[in-house]
Amino acid sequence: MKAVTITTYGPVADVVTLADVPAPAVGPRDVLIEARAAGVNPIDHLIVKGFMQPEGLDRTRVLGNEVAGVVAAVGAEVTAFAVGDEVFARVDPRVGAAFAEFVAVDASLVAAKPAAMSFEEAASLPLVALTAWQALTEQSRLKAGQRVLIHGGAGGVGAAAIQIAKHLGAEVVTTVSTDSVDLVRSLGADQVVDYRNEKFDELVAPVDVVLDTVGGDTQDRSFPLLKPGGTLVSIVFVPDAEAKQARWGVEAKAFFMRPDGAQLARIADLVASGELRPVVRTVLPLERAVDALTEVERGRARGRTVLAVSS
Ligand SMILES: NC(=O)c1ccc[n+]([C@@H]2O[C@H](COP(=O)([O-])OP(=O)(O)OC[C@H]3O[C@@H](n4cnc5c(N)ncnc54)[C@H](OP(=O)(O)O)[C@@H]3O)[C@@H](O)[C@H]2O)c1
Image 1 (tube, rainbow, N blue to C red):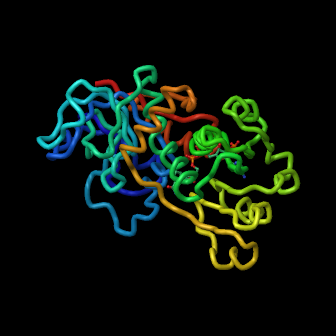
Image 2: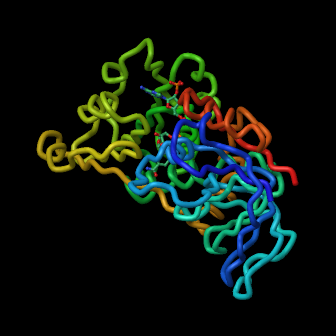
């Protein structure tokens, strides 16, 4: 089968190639998905460059972390899915291998794709929507009536987080650059700060929760905005929790998202009810994975980048 691979770590344009590789084995708890589309995330270009991979690469590695497609086979123990079902998943990060014609995924990580959602839209959601869901419902326990500041509202995680926070009944403040103001308003943001022309720390009234998708100075300048007892949850940079608790009386934490098919099914329900709209900006064929990864690497996202897979 065709797959986007690396055999060594390095710059995207130097090491990423489309290759012919064996189709994955299907374990007893696996669903084999014939892929129609795969979402491209910052983690994909970071993996290409060897981020958090202390050992060298001693095999061909198939890239990719999320997929949408049609079930082509199921393992002997799988009862929740059948051949022909339309599904999507954030794959096991230890396995990856979503930029391929066939993807084997543990059934517990898979959810049914809502019929009204295209494969491209479905492939754009699992990683970012699960991250946003876990940040807001598990890490910060955002409640109806609370205020949340979401940095990077036009990015993949930010756009999902705005909509999930509105679903939870929160008031949403977000930071974006000028080009993205209309987009995030259309997603439901109540207050939008153009971070290139305005200082968010001078404009935002106290919030209960900050979702930090940017890190650095943006994270530092967010702490004074938190109400006492508030929570900053970062997906990019681990804050010094003790120091922040002592200085500001707030909780500060970072986390890595986890794949979860049951949560993804709840996210599918939000899409089906119109509360969560996938924002896909660019669809490129699998053959143009280098271009897709390069676009995501620029970090100027206004909607997701997706690879279309045709066998
Ligand atoms: N811990 C986890 O489990 C986890 C999960 C998913 C993602 N992540 C990480 O989280 C980060 C965001 O992921 P993503 O998928 O949302 O990325 P993305 O789709 O590339 O979006 C990044 C966004 O950040 C915005 N941005 C850049 N600088 C900013 C600033 N100073 N203030 C406000 N916005 C700014 C960019 O908008 P402009 O072009 O308008 O500036 C862009 O829309 C990445 O570093 C990713 O690796 C971590």
